[in-house]
Amino acid sequence: MSRWLVTNVPPLLLLLGLTVLIVGLSIAVRSLVRRRFPQLSGETHNDVTKFAFGVVAFVFAFFMSFLASSLWDQISGLGGTDEGVLIEGATGVQLARDSTVFDTADRDRIRQSLLDYGHAAEAEWPLAAGKRWPLAADDRLARLYNSYEQVAARTDAQKTLLSTSFANLDKMSQARTERLLTARTDEGPPWSLWAVVIVTSVLVLGCAIIYGVEQPAVHSTMVATVGALVAANLFLILELSHPYVGEIGTSPEPLHELVRVLEAPPR
Image 1 (cartoon, helix red, strand yellow):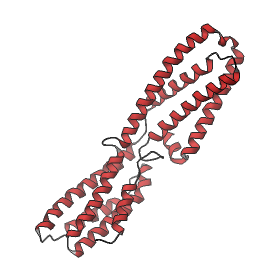
Image 2 (cartoon, rainbow, N blue to C red):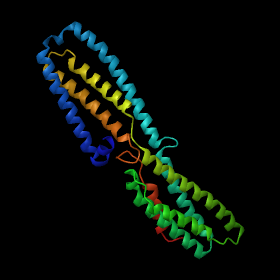
Image 3 (cartoon, helix red, strand yellow):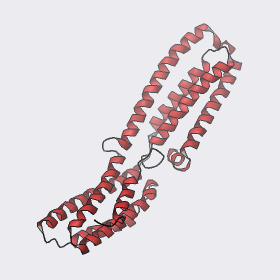
């Protein structure tokens, strides 16, 4: 469900929808509770609610911060999905630059094979994010290996860079495999984490709803503010849950840069 929401609903619309839904439900529940339990505005009740609200709000803030930080590290942290795509794209660009040392026929064949792989990797990006394993890029990668195997290195510089290129090619291939496996196995946070998110969110809203404020307009504003805060946190967790989809997910820009470099005339 979370993947479908992030993939198919625009971020702004998703944020607005969550905010309207949670704030609207919270205010409606507040009105119902106040009509049925008018005694909730007592001082003794407020003292208890104030203590409970402080504890619940602290736990909510701590847990949401921890979860958001963990999910963000999965995308942009050391060894995250951003780093993997950067390695794939940067290694491809380095292969393109190193190819200039080879003879013209070898260089042109390698650059064309790299360009074909870059286009295939771009095309497979949305497919891999949808948990499909495209085969076109596998074929282009095999042709790229074959292009290097056909190189007849004559000089010491060519022999050195050919060996380095094979190592870089292995690195690029590994980065792609990790990207596809991560996208294919991505299920988002487990149900246990979602259960804690929902329970702590309900507790925060519940404490705000039963807090004793005599003026209905002031109390509604307070409940709406807490509801908007909860909605914003849920939106953030949703957007961070899947590393290859959504506004915050990993971008294929390094692969686009690889294609731009290869489409430019070699120097």
